[in-house]
Length: 180
Image (tube, rainbow, N blue to C red; front, side, top):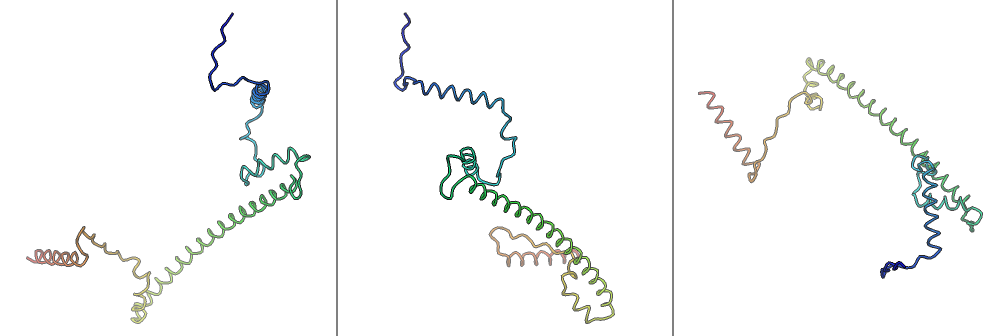
């Protein structure tokens, strides 16, 4: 006669119900192995949250028994379809917006090139008209081709005014050395 294995304090005797559940789970896992991967299948109402899709699936499976005032699979599906239609409209609008923005950027590039060419013509004309030449000097295009001077970095703990004074003194010293 074999001695029974000692029971742990947390172990409970298994009932027939729990054994049946285990067997059902094993069968369902075996059944799932034969089915195609669910992630590869298209998801109905993909734009809805997973919880909403789960409830819709439940109401679809049990449409005959889960039917309440104002809440049925048909009413929920109609709302979900409406959300899907609106999502499609949003996607279409996004594509149209992207196309409009691309057209706007192209038009902006064209006007910039046209105004640069017009400015160049005005500069040539202004060579004989001093008033126009003076006016054109204030335009952004007039200064676009000129290299900008780099600002000197402010040394830590030194004010910008002191740095400017030191820079001016350094330039003066360099200038006097080159004259010698």
